Image 1 (cartoon, helix red, strand yellow):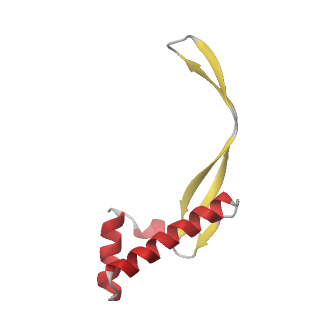
Image 2: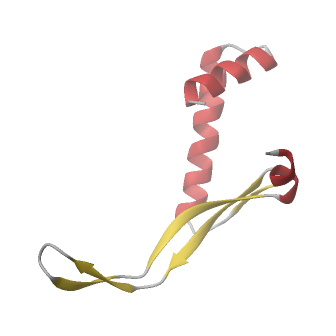
Length: 90
């Protein structure tokens, strides 16, 4: 499902116009992104959590140049579904 399809479904189920639904979806995504940038997790009861995971530094190989490189530690966004969400998806 694409963002446009999500907006259409929200507009149809709530009775608001697509422009309003698009503004709500865009604002929702922007707020989640801003919270993650600040290092805050976003918890949506019954749906899941948007969290920041720490990836440890690791060594890797560049096979074409036959050299070892170090990939530094980094933080990446992740989604963890709630138990209720996981039980309903099959």
